[in-house]
Image (cartoon, rainbow, N blue to C red; front, side):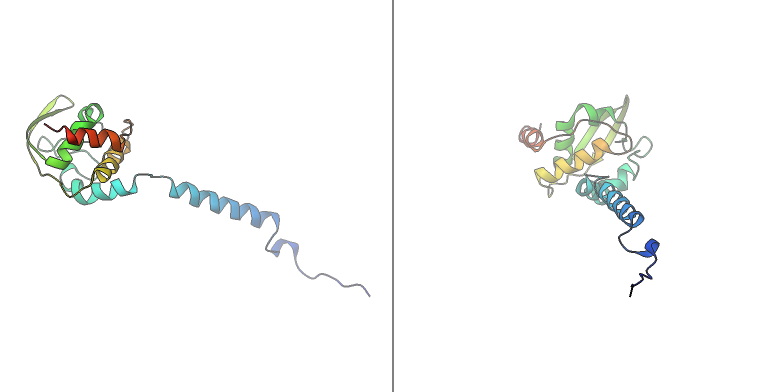
Length: 145
């Protein structure tokens, strides 16, 4: 007596297409999880900065300087850390435009949280600025003027 397998090979859970589909899904999930390594910094930006600097980092006309494409952010990461911690009251020049106003301090952020915030800004909205390290930010914060 010969037994016959009535299972359709295309429906078998471990056929080649199922395995390829599973690998594709795992790859997509892995890439999506690593798409933004600055999630914590993005959260801080959204909650603490976006109201004035806007969601797209574009600033607010001549009142609030942009962070997207900002030469000041690119060239002065230590000063950015100090501004986050201690605020700013006075003039700042960004992309050749002088802004004068007040930015409130955010003293509750730790040094590490400021690193995450700056690294988010340095890599958001087309910015391709160098990452800052905890050591750089710590040193800058110890020497704020």
